[in-house]
Length: 271
Image 1 (tube, one colour):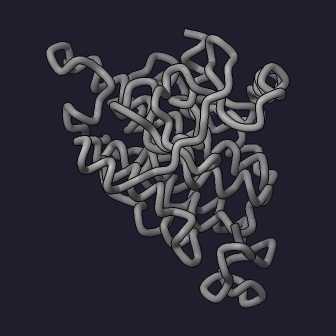
Image 2: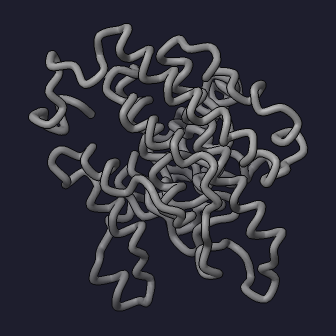
């Protein structure tokens, strides 16, 4: 279980997978590489999906130290380098491995500016797309090291917190013969914690403690993993958090500020 938490599956750079979501190879946006065996692959840049960075920073630094001697990806168990594997759409189709999420991620940095991709995949109830969107928003925010150019993206994440993700059987990392309601429910939590951790990280960057410790405001439904009860609480909290984010951005003079015209910036300037 510990190894699973430090594999690519639980890293925001492998945006389209989680411990329970996404079959087959993954794709690392950090290394621009296909991940042939995401369960056994990691690197020193791992950024956990399930918890905000500031909560698990010590563990991440220890992990980074353990794999500091590798310039890229490495085998999580054997501590051997894993070669970078360039994505090929032709190979994916001819080997029956085409995955639209991986295809999009492989093209992500080619979009000009790249952040447009974040807005294009926001919204909806598709579980893998929601997971991918939340992971990309968290990468964007982490790379910028600021909240000023990410409040628009985190607003979209907050708005969808209470959505119940939908999964095709083939979306879930489990034998189709054993996919039941429990597996689907656990996958819903994978998406939710990826999103909520992003909200907490935004709270860290913006200095909004209420968002940093948003878990404390969700009472017993979160502790007991009661999704129905949690959705009821989110009906109250989500509008409050959206108002808080907007007010903070207005107070700081950054809410769609004319001083920073996002629409005209290149990807290198804003990402």
